[in-house]
Image 1 (cartoon, rainbow, N blue to C red):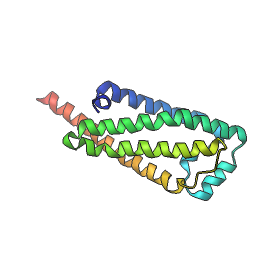
Image 2: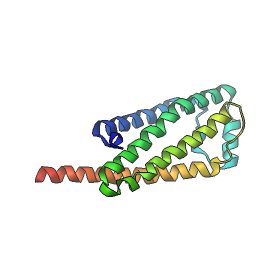
Image 3: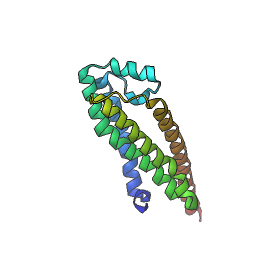
Image 4: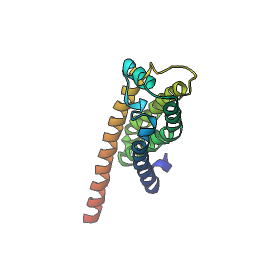
Length: 161
């Protein structure tokens, strides 16, 4: 775990997360304006899927497989790395939500890729996978924010000493 706690790696993951976030905004029109990641209710998910043209589904598939695979890796490892580095002996425990959101988001992406490829409609589990992903994301982000505050506090305290 030393790799994801190193300063250059954390900065790289942070910058990559921001860049990918901006890329999603730029690519939203190519998928009809709404990513399936942002809906979870079965009826809403089906309506969003069925409202897409064949080209939008293909575009969404590639965004999911390429960008939305890199995205949870970047933010999940960033959140976990921040927690692991700045929470001392509690770091491994504090990193669990970061690793958890990574796994759950990749699971959601797999369901979407299978559906968007036309192999089978398997979006029903998004009814619980998507809310779980979002809750883990918010928890991991909060932990990372607290870790950043700890880092700043330590930096300031070190300069005063």
